[in-house]
Length: 161
Image (tube, rainbow, N blue to C red; front, side):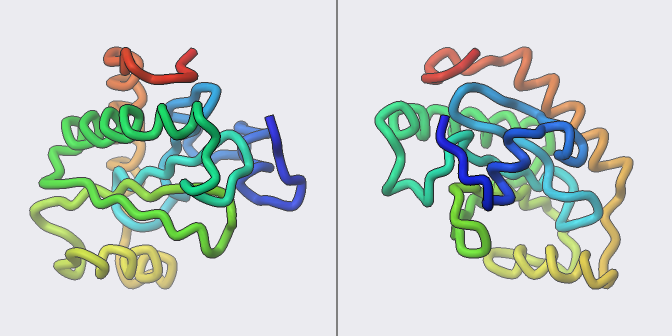
């Protein structure tokens, strides 16, 4: 597996004990965890490649074949666990050039009534202390998501352990 020793995501992938809240799902290709504590909204998940790769255009065949079924499954289970109206999905890979994707639950009621691109302002607002993220809700959703992914393993995932 190719890692970049200067990449923050590669470092986290190599030392999963450093991931706040722990790993929710992991296989040979993907790693899923909750966004850092106190940020965004409960249920805001991060999905990242195990291998250091700049983005979708650079996926190898296994990553490309797994991408659709994996993300469909991760989003469906996250919707079921959170009760969200939809799951926003975004990947810019700007701050860290290692493929990572945000899966953000869009609830019926959101802080600051955020919708669409405004959702990403909630990351900044929570970091600035303008909104609070319920730590108990984060832990509960994280635990339920982890358990649901164990119960409902996606049968079509390439790289699943």
